[in-house]
Each structure stands twice: as C-alpha cells, then as structure tokens.
Length: 485
Ligand code: UDP
Image (cartoon, rainbow, N blue to C red; front, side, top):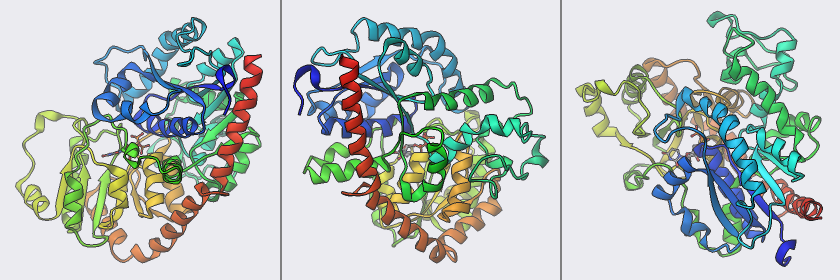
C-alpha cells in the first residue's frame, strides 16, 4: 500500500436520494477496503437522517483513511424533497452547492484525514457541476450513475429522440407508440417506457432539457461507473461504450461488498443497511411464521408517493388476491393525510389475516427470506437489483424518472416479472399478484434463478465486476499520480 501523499484521496459525491447514497456508500466501503483515502460528501439533510437511523458512523470507523463531510443542498431543512419536489434540488445545487463545493475544495476543507488534497472526484453524473469544477481545478473526475445502463442509455438518447421527431408526446392516447430512435431498443420501447420526464408536450420543459443535457455531460468525465453487470446489460453497454470508452460495471454493488467482506472475514454487522427511516425488524418474525414463497413483498422505495385512491386500489387488490403480503407504508408515502383513520373495516379485517404493514423494512433481508415469493415494486434500480440477486420475480409499478425503463426491461427483455405501469386498478392488481404467486411463478422461477446466479458470478473472483473494480483502482492510482504532480 502507498504511504503518505501517494495514497489516492477520492472524494465521493452522491445524488442526495437514498438509493444513490446507499449504493455509493457501498462503493466507498469497497474503495476503503482497497486502501484508498475516501471523503464521502453528503448533503447535511441526508447525513443527519442517516446518522439518526443507521450505524453509519460505526460502520466506517474501522477505516482510518475514511471521513464524512457535509455540504448544503441549498434548500431549507423543512423543504419537501420527495415526489415531484425532488427536482427542485437541481436549481438549488446550481445556485448554492456548486460555488460551495469549489470553495471547499480550494480552501482545503475537503482534504483527507491525513491532510492531502483531493486527487480524484467520483460524483453522480447527473450533478454535472462536479465535472465542471474538477476540470476547472485540474482534478480528474469519474462519473457514477446509480441507475441501470438501459435507463441511462434512454436518457442519453433523449436528444436523438427529439431530433427524430418522436418527442414530444401527444397525450395519453399516444403512449403505446413505438420509439425507434434509441439504439438497441427499437423493437420494444414505447413512449410510456421512456423516462417519465419525457411525458410532456413541451420540448422546452426545464426537466426534459436538464436531463437531456446532464446525461450527455456524464461522459465528459474520465470514466463512468455503473451499478450493473455485463451479463444483465451487455448489449446496451456496448452502445454506451461507443460514446464513453471507459465504463466500469461494478454491480450489483451490495452483493460485491458482501462477498468482499466475507472473503476478508470482516464483521458482517457492518452490512447493516443504511436508512433514512427507522427500520422495523418485526416483519422478519412475521415472515418466519409464513410458508415457503407464500408472501408478496410490497414496497415503493424512499421517494414515491401515492394518492389516497391509489393506496386503496393497492390495498383492495392485495386483500382480494388472498395472498399473504408484507407492505412498506412509509410515514410520508401517502398524500391527503386528512382522510386518515377511515380505512374500511373490510380492509383492516382482511389485512389482519394475511398481511403485515411496516413503516420501513430491512429490504435486502426481506427479499432473501425464504417466505418471500414475489415483489411488487416501483422499479427503483436498487430494489430491482436486490430482487434480481435474491431471485425474486417482480410486478413493476413504476413511479418516475428511470423506473419506466427498468420495468420494461424487467418484463420484456429479462423476463423477470410483469409490468403494470400506468395502471392502478384493484382488479388488475389482484390478477397480477395471483399470476405472479400462482400459475406464472414456475415460468419466472427459471429466469430469476439463472439471473441470480449470473449476478453472483459477476462479483466473484474472475467475474466481470470483480475485474472491472481492479481496473478502476489501477486507473484511480494513475490519475491520482498525475493530479499530485
Ligand atoms: N429500502 C429499505 N427498506 C424499505 C424500502 C426500501 O431498506 O422498506 C431500501 C431498498 O433496499 C433500496 C432503497 O431503499 O436499497 C430504495 O432504492 P431504490 O433505488 O429502489 O428506490 P428509490 O428510493 O431511490 O426510489
């Protein structure tokens, strides 16, 4: 291992949402295990919640070269950051966080625990400003995207879709139109499967414009890290490589880290998931009492919000399916709180017999539990990867952003489940749950078991993600030597 200033000092700057923070923390732990000095730059808002609800500080205490630093996301503490309001962060980042980041780098506030300056920045590619700042200050930057390769490629192609005249959308009746200008997806991608920001009839829409621009910017960095694996997304990755030759696929990161810790005999308790909500572990006891593969796990991640009507449709669909279910209802999942307390008696009675509801679950543990046989998900990329690793088939009800693309790939390309996007109807939910947990389970079982095998192979010694990680470390060392000079 290098000594003193020869040790690369990498600053990691994630997108401030739970999924991206979680997967970049896993990368931070892997890089720390490889002996690099790491500064993890989190927004004040997310850091405070992580510290409150997880063992995050203890978990990294064993790495002497690791430190957390925080930065303002530019919004007041009580400003909502879920649902549609999430996109407001991008304006405040530009105004507040970008100049702050530059100042922190220049003033030495982000120097390593040993006092060394930053020799490499790994930043979420959608926050394009760290690339600008890195270029300005002569610090190499590697982008990380914590979305799937297929959704990244769809975002990347937005400009081409517009130029081909396939956007804007002409409204609801237009949603099944085939989009033919995304290379590799010509035969199955419909308008409804494009990233949700494309659902506008205004080509000047700021969200559309920002994403079309920022996703192209990702490849201005010296490399691109993706939390995926070659056997899952090889054909799409070859399209991405035509634009960005240095792509490091390191996924599934959560499995990679687990394997690394096991092989180093490190404490597995350090794997306790990071959370911005209080984890309710009582659901594991409940699962312990359920038969093999009898439970459908229902969770919509950390940002999705439901209307009260949608909540009711899901609830009736689940109860009417008569399948056992474990459902995560976050404290801020549902809008229109004023109707609370008026849950129909039949639902409460129906749930008592077959359902269990928690505010936040230990998801990886839940998906790995033998009682779980299906996952009704919003198709967030971390949830999708966690389900793939656990070999659990999915019903996808995508909410926004990259999830529309993921759910199409789950059903049409990987054959790992069914896509229910844009429909929230109790009869359909009931039918899909019954199909997934009943007559179609055999069909999906074959593909889910095989993909789970390939996922674990990719992070094992000699696997594609394993080798790419070693290549990344080498490249960071080389870049850092140039930066130090
Ligand atoms: N998660 C969890 N418990 C829950 C629900 C979600 O630990 O009750 C975790 C899940 O394991 C995943 C993350 O939250 O790692 C959600 O990330 P994803 O990318 O799926 O969705 P997002 O929250 O970004 O929409």
